[in-house]
Image 1 (cartoon, helix red, strand yellow):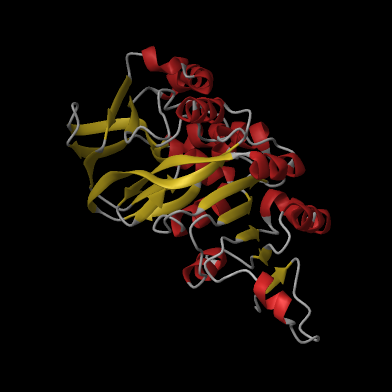
Image 2: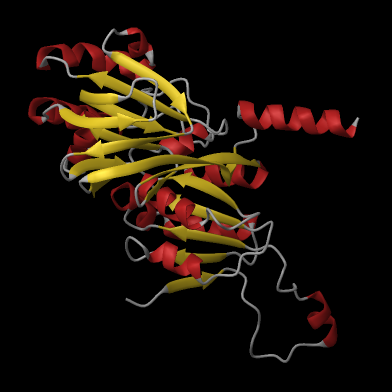
Length: 340
């Protein structure tokens, strides 16, 4: 499929450029603004609102380049060959999968910030940035927001911006992609119910942690942030810029006990349960006896049999935080202090 690209303030190529116009033309190292819109996100909501989104984008960022993605991997391929000088901004318009793809592609792009306009079901990264659910309000928040550091993790060949989950967490994610038209909390509630009924405990080896050894688990969540699965607080103590991975492990429980733990995990109150182990560290290793289903930022993958390193890259990204978010307020306070 041909690449759908729009420059929302194109130069007039029919008229020769005057000397004054040439002087005003932005140099190649001038920061640029690029947006990627996933038309399938939000059960097609992006596609239905694309025209007003384009109109608002050109008002806020004249000259912005807008790419309409045609499937997974499209944005990453474009970014691979796209020059982005320091100070540039890349806007992800879509769900957590879109955010993951663009964020992973920007890890090695120093000085480039990413903004997020949420259109998915989970929107966990956007929520941690303080982005409103209304996409036009989110665009305003990005325009007036503050780029701040965000850690990035890796597990085997996969990069993650927010969380990686095993066992019940991965099964819930698997079923959440098979709930038909449901969105939001209803989608994850049904997925959790189906995962609870079908899942089996996972046995794996863990090395490099305080509680190393062989584990038989109901759930493992490894996280950068403190929110996953559309609002669950499995890693409630996590901070996105502290250089640490937060690991929540739940020992194998009888099936009938799991429903009592789920609502507590929604608010982070599960951490005092005797079956829950919680650690914070920069790296460790896992050993899998067979190919294992995992979720990576809400997308389902198979992690191959064998040993895999889990690591963190501190402050590898710059994500735009809404102006009324506590992190942005603290950052502005420090800036005022420095200027005094």
